[in-house]
Length: 129
Image (cartoon, rainbow, N blue to C red; front, side, top):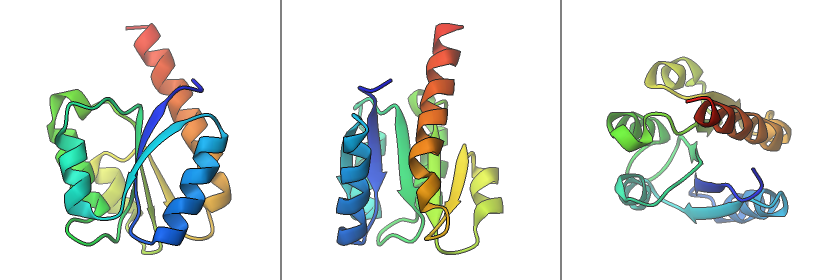
């Protein structure tokens, strides 16, 4: 699944560029933006994303709001979503339909393995459907 496309939303530019570089080093394509309103337009677009990675604390719309909106769209209901946040919102993220929740900065070293696992599981479910 090396050619997967990931939508990544993070408002801290340094963090965004660092994480984007890490994901691209894995061979994944990354579309990124820095605010919730721009991300909302991307979520609503017809662009295909194999996975969406949202920081929760964003200007314009939170990662949880983006997740809830994505889950209302028929073509995004099964797209894996990872919420990453420094705040304790895991329960809300899971209720909204997140496939994974990572805590900043503690779980950042699990980001690549979490994404790889979700992409693999998503590819398997598409093959079996």
